Image 1 (tube, helix red, strand yellow):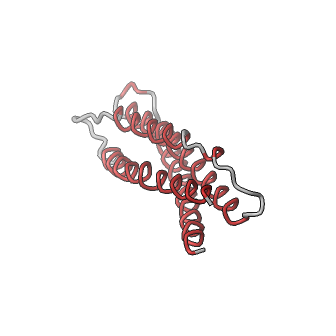
Image 2: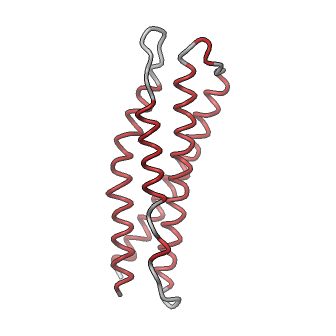
Image 3: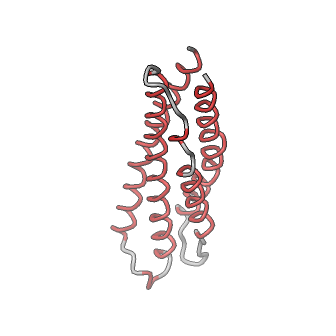
Amino acid sequence: MDYRIALKQLIEEYRDGILEIYQVTSPTAMKDAKKLGLFKKRKFGSYIESFRSHMETAKALDVDAIEIPETDEESENLVALLRKSIESFCLFCDLSIEFYEIAEKKQYKDGGVTVEEYTQALSQMQRVLMRSFEDLNNLGQGYDAFQAS
């Protein structure tokens, strides 16, 4: 049963240690991205570094270190949901980095970024965000069922 405790701790570390911090970074960065102006240039470097940090921290979660017996299908399913959620979260962070790099360049006339590139990066990031939310919701439902058993 120690593996169940380890799995629970890993999910809580992902939820409380990574996602809560991310929930501060993302809305603040998006708020600044919506205010791209002619006179006051926004610096997105700190947001980009935060997304890199979130992604690296999520990738560092050692899901494979938990040895789950083949007979515990519920825990195996929960591990699969956790892996999928981490994967989509990391993809979202990666696309966020790309978007905010484009947003930073777009502020400057000679940045070489077209409106189409900016819009495409934004919509791609938003699509992956929706998938990431769906994966996180599935993980939450699986975790609730796991705790109830």
